[in-house]
Length: 173
Image: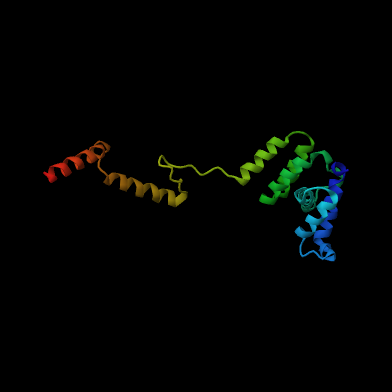
């Protein structure tokens, strides 16, 4: 029943949330009400939140409910995550169509969502300092070049600890 009825449940949950009908059951907020309601349906609350999130997305982008493939609940959940992050209705609509036409699979959608949520760090220099952008990049390069120009050459830097020990020992005698 849940497999085929998830869309209907999501629509009803959206109505309850928008009209604050959960207050009629003496619940302070939607979360409390949903936790109680999930017990009566014998599902975890996160499943109901998933249905609600998908239906919200579908309504926001004006996707025809009649065209929703009920088997794509997992893919639609990932697309809803992407939509929540980007608010890009056109891209979301396109992803749903691609999922329905099997042009894109759930694994690829999860990768897109993951890349959005966890962006790769910016390029860095050889010392793992983040690469600055624009004018700051130019300024950073000038400062580091100036600083590096003031340092003695590397061979001397390698000898300095040895010289320090030698001077220390000779100073003690």
